[in-house]
Amino acid sequence: MLDLHEATSPEVGKAVSKGAVAVLAVGAQEQHGAHLPLSTDTVMAQGVARRIAEAIGGLLLPPIAYGDAWNNEGFPGTLSLSPDTMRTIFMDIGRGLSRSGFRALVIVNGHFGNREPIALAARLLKQETGFPVLHLDYPGMEQAANDICDSKPAAPTFYHADEVETSIMLALAPIW
Figure 1 (cartoon, one colour):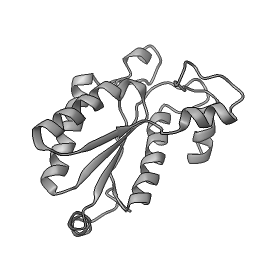
Figure 2 (cartoon, helix red, strand yellow):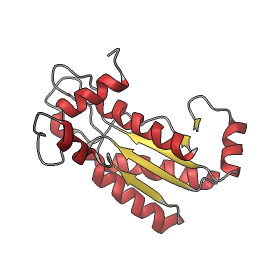
Figure 3 (cartoon, rainbow, N blue to C red):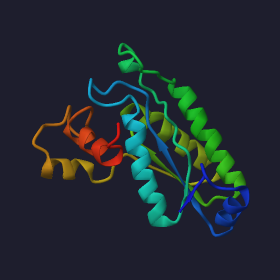
Figure 4 (cartoon, rainbow, N blue to C red):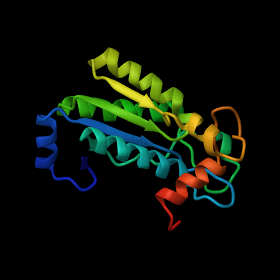
């Protein structure tokens, strides 16, 4: 795995020549109750993205730490980008990766509100450039949560500031 945040241009060029896939985490800056940081969605998505990049020998991109979080804007610290801004960001990053010679992009989404702009950008990138984009949330999370959690999710398949996110944050960022 190569972390773009720490990589040199020649290192990235070498990864491209070997057919590297880029991996991008997308989170949000939003409230997660009184006990979790505003960066929870970003930290979690980056944790999964790192593991994917390690497993496939991919290029880990710096995360996008903002998302479409308008529904939480009543809480201090929550900052939101519009769906159009989000789509444009994904399109621009995808086009740049495609022009640079990357084989594909994997987007790990850590925030429910980002789903539509990510899906639209993935479809448009494929139509426009042929560049493949795989987008996912947390594969297997619902089953794992059903198997081990004592608490119920906020809604079916929706985890927010609960036992699941708190446990993951304790594993990924215990110093918070």
